Image (cartoon, rainbow, N blue to C red):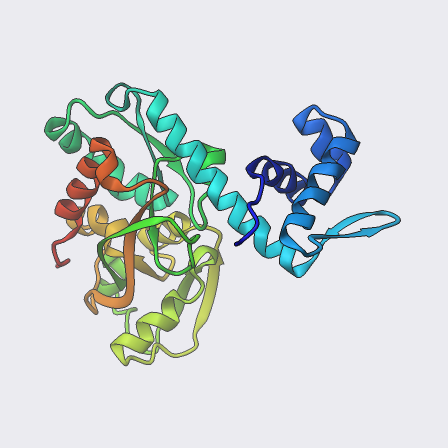
Amino acid sequence: MARQIPLNTLRFFEAAGRLGSFVKAADELRITHGAVSRQIRLLEESLGMALFERRNRGVFLTPQGSQLLVAAQQVFERLDATIDALRKPVRHVPLVVSCEPTISMKWLIPRLSHFYKQHPEVQLHLFASGGSVAFQRDGVDVALRRNDFNWAVGIHAEKVCDEWIAPVCAPALLKRGQLHLPLQKVLHTSSRMTAWANWRSVSKTDTGHGDSQTYEHFYLSLQAACAGLGVAIGSVFMVQEEIDSGRLVAPFGFMRDGSEYFLLSPLPFESDPRRTAFLQWMRQQMHHEPP
């Protein structure tokens, strides 16, 4: 029979592994250094393996310890999220939505009035962020992300839509005859450095190797395109407003780049009517093909 692992020892282990110090773990948990050391030794004896290497200048996770730390953090994050959800009447607290800043600004915020008309009982709080999500640390309920990274095991992921991208520029470049292949001025963004390579791959188009300029965020590269400084790659969900208003044009058309948007949650969507409502609304709003 497998030996039972005292759950409380995992709390001590998680703190020590995360902080890289028994002393710091003791301070955080408000207990003695000796108590932390004893609890971790008990856990190691229960598992029959060393989780830390003890050296003169500190403690360091073994490979087995590193693996257990990831699992422990995921378990405690889900436990904390579940307890928070049970304690709060979900219909009376905002749903915290994490979304990439440019999509938040250019796509989601302009459509929020439509969401509130359909779901007046749900309030949203936007958290502008991209990449991996620390749900518990940042108090995030759901996160809209492209599947260009691996999210943690145990996260509930629901596909929302495909990604569509296209080169976009100011209409003035077309009028002056400055938009032709190879492109003379290409605008990049540090937050998605492979965007042009992805478009060339799916469109089978050689844009050449003209001058280029890199901006820190998508929003800046798109603003530069609106100002006539060159041609940027744009997601349809970031440039639809500018396309509709005529500030930008997409002369080569939009194409799927093979990536997809997912809504992520540490809890099952069906456990929370706010999550379900937001997921269904996002699918309705993002399902249509771009022009």
